[in-house]
Image (cartoon, rainbow, N blue to C red):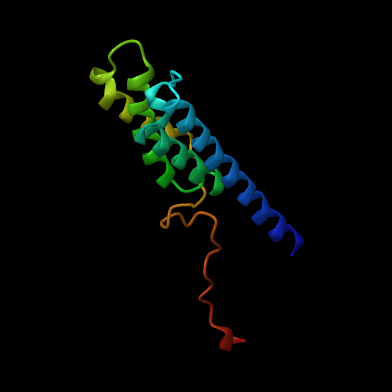
Length: 127
């Protein structure tokens, strides 16, 4: 029970640090400091949420991947010094293909019966 309370406490601390950091960034932006616009944009938030979901689920489910790909591509468009719009669909397909190649296969296919023992249909009443 102690680990559950500790884990919940750590989540509150992390959430507090994130919210406080965002508030400080907004305050510094309003004071006139030159903070890049991509830091406080929707696609950076999408990228961060996707990575957070993936981390919390140990990157086992693939829903986080969509958020990371969309957020990452739009963030790269803002950060990069050259135009990435020609490569967007290629980058999406390369990213999805790499994920499909590198993800572990946790479940065997339902038609794979190679490790099953054969069923014995022998007549037990014959003895």
